[in-house]
Image 1 (cartoon, rainbow, N blue to C red):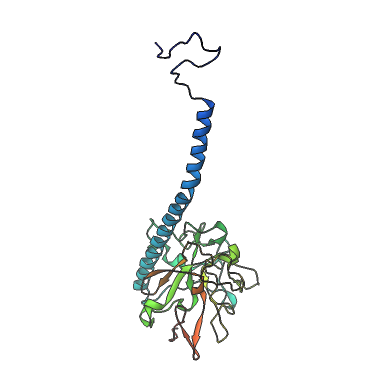
Image 2 (image 1 turned 135 degrees about the horizontal axis):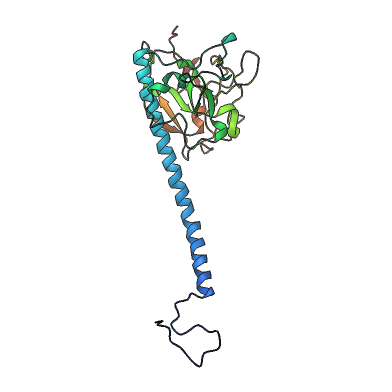
Length: 276
């Protein structure tokens, strides 16, 4: 039996006294409250998503460290070559007409729980390369290795805590990132290049005119726009891995290439000892 009370004096169509029905006014108030709550909570949700992605990226970098160390144990304490060369010292191509990269050499040593792709990377920033373990497959990455350390011996790194070897990168200048000298094959055709970190004026070695390293994941840095408060893949910067295995988060100004009294200094200083 209904608990609603019948009022014989009430106008026709009026709700009974004590009705359980919600009025249109109440529905409107609830809808407004829901919208306001969504507007207030959405930025918090987005922040939590970004923090989660940043943490997963850090975990990826640590897994890459472990894989690099295992590779070095098997290969005379050397880092892997950044790419296999073809004609003219440019990246050699595999069955699917893509380059073999340093990631290929350590992919079997990398824990399957982790990835070579940062979850915050835009699809256009990701490199697709040959998969050395699968002739019919490809490998994706959003991390690049610093060119001077291609095949370099770990024990010869002078300042491992201050020497960058891997960082978050962007492929072919995607999201308006800085890539003034795109990699090309021996016929002059553009190649994926986000797997290698080079410089603003050379893809072979720096000189006295070098100002920046290239292909780092700093959106909007095209043309050399590296400012302290510039955009980064993550809120506070990108992840950079040192030769000692430390993962650091650095803003766009970290792309600067430093020289002092004719010598290279800082995070991107290339090795002083040549290794063959």
